[in-house]
Amino acid sequence: MQLTHVARGSRRGLVLAGGGLVDALGTGLFLVLIPVYVVVRLGIDPVQVGVVVGVANLIALASPGPAGWLSDRIGAGGVWTFLLLVRAVGYAAFPFVSSFWAYAVLLCVLGLADRASTPVQQLFLLQSESPENRSRAMAVLRTARNIGMSAGLLLGGVVVSIGTDTAYFTGFAINAASFAVLLAVVRLLIRRGSGPLPVSAEPAEPAVESPERRKAVLKDPRYLTLVAGNAILLLHDSVLFTLLPLWIITRTPLADGWVGPLLAINTVLTVGLQVPLTRWTRTIPAARRTAIRALVPLLVATGCFFGAENASADVVLLVAVLAVVLMTVGENMHSVSAFELSYRLAPERSMGAYLGAFDFGQAVQFAVGPPFMTVVVLRGALLGWGALGAAFAVGTVLVAAAARKKS
Image (cartoon, rainbow, N blue to C red):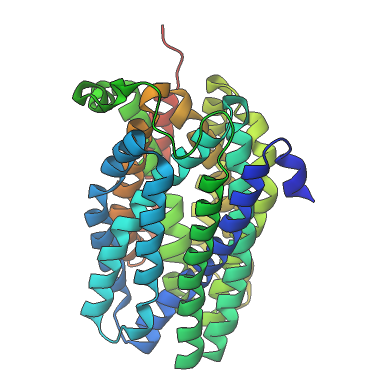
């Protein structure tokens, strides 16, 4: 098996990847269900959906930094346990949502836990692996998550095609249960902790708790440039998981059921790309080159999406598939290079604080990206897709500048 091969020497990595696979299956299912459910079943306007997602992610800006700092102090395992509990309970409440405001409030609450989980998960993995195995272990986890995501997206297409309340509610319940499965895996790994840095142990050097060290990242212009550039490039996430479903529903003649399969193309390709691409990012200069090269498929994909808006009905699907493929290639080249740079440019003793700042930049994109997609790109083809391409170019310049060798 591919996962067994790439995770050799890391039994814990395989177990965590298994839990991530189940969790991602639920997430993929939810990503397909929720935009169609709130637009078609609840009658909420697509622009309102984008605005609510943006507001939820704006509120979530408050969580990554404190979560990373707290993980430095008490260990990532305990913090992640709490966050997974909150998410399991919160996502279980979606079957009871029946109005715009209930949807908005629940999404805002869960946004805090979702965004806090990203740096904590990364630190959990980093504390569990030796430095030479970190990138590979993260790629294995991402590969497993994308296998699960692919299955969830395809399952979501089936649920949307059925279209009954029972089908939707069952899908929401599966997503909530997936967080409980990952929680059980995390607790198992903590109980059986071993390796270079136990996941539940406090860092050996208490200096990480000093206010000066916690604020060091705010005085590091190189790292802040990386954070800004990465946040802009992450607009590809909003293209795929916010814009694409709404674009299919409102701007193309494609059936709603194509949302899941098109998103599954992204996750299936990512399964094959993540681990091999780590060979291109083993040093800071190599990661920089990969980030720059990622701009080409991102720009071509943007052009394809624009072209699909003017294509005849019988070729829209073909152009949309090509756009998703190219966006996926660019996304993966960016993600592996950004992860490598995120920890290689961070001091080891302040890893949690720096990763919290890095995810703060991601949270900014998740706050700005969805409304940008729905208000600008979804409403004005030439201006919107042109603005998106320009943003990708600016983000690449910033990441390249941050990763440039110091003189």
